[in-house]
Amino acid sequence: MRDQLRGCIKINAKGRDIYGFINHIHDSRISCFSQYVKKDCFCAEIYRRDLRRLSELAAEHGLELTSYEYDTLSAEVIRRRRRFGIVIGIVLVLAASLYFSGVVVTIDIEGNESVSDEVILAALSEMDVRPGTPFGQIDYISCENRLQLMVDGVSWAGMHRTGHRLVVQVTEVVEKPEMLRERIPCNLVAAKEAEITYTTVLDGQLMHKVGDYVMQGDLLVSGVTSDETGHTTLHHAMGTITGIYRDEALFSGEYEKERLTPTGRSETRRRLRLFSLDIPLSPGRNGYELRRVRSVQEPLKMFGRTLPISITRNEYTELSRDVTVLSRDELRSELMQKVFLYEKNFLPECEILSREITENEKDGTLTLSVAYRLEGDITSQMEILVK
Image (cartoon, rainbow, N blue to C red; front, top):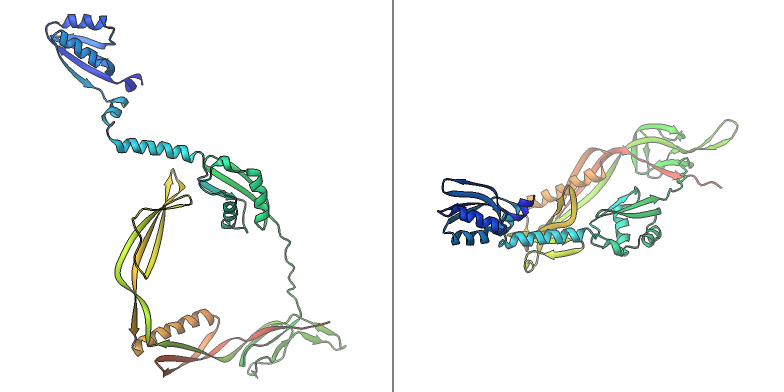
């Protein structure tokens, strides 16, 4: 290890006055080891610091001196001493290590289930506790107490430091379970005008049979029953009544419409996110008046841990306002797409027996009127009000 720091050099000295040179080395107290004489050449190893003095002695005795330095840590440092990028990099790494050792790098929240991490982090941010905050500026007791007051649903909070992490442990309030009255007396009435196709009653008295035609609001299953003695019982009517009914939906669109279309120009700009700082890496600003932005954030990781440093890449696509005139087929295709989405989102539990589409064109607008013949559940609960 000592040779790695001092640097070790092998020398070869040739000439007539070799032994006088060797005696002079010993008199000068120069550290010389692994020395031997072979023919008219003196070989040895010395420390780097003695090379200059040894060169002067060799010149005094008229010897030809050659040297070779072994690969050591100090030799590598000297060879690279003018590579300022490496020096700057080492300085930055040391400065970053020193900086990160004293500030909050990540905040880990433990013990929360119903309260989200975002709510707790927002409350901590209002207390000036966020990634980048020096640990020495955090009043742990005050923050713990304020966190319980600021966040609904937190009954206890504790904070402690683990390395560069701030660990926040919370205990949530155990809410009293809500007592739901699931057996409230009610009737089942018709939500739509329909022809009944199927009935099944779990509780209550069926008022209509299959094949009956009912109007909206008609009583289907009664939650009030009476026995032979005249005793009346209230029930929570339950059952499934399906029927065939009709429904209608309108979908309209204009032939001539202003739309935003890509011009073909695009630009990518990057930003450095350091804790709460947002540092632009690309000069200037994006000059597109109308644009579509796609952002991709790439966090930096070290030893498997995500650092509060990330590179955000924003991809800008320029748009322009264009007035597009659609043909009848193109507009009809767009409206049929709306019809498909309507059926997928609003009629998923119904069986579509038939669909009749009527087209109406007026003042540059095409309207599709869709008449449905559907089969599905037609029941709706109506509470029985009792004193």
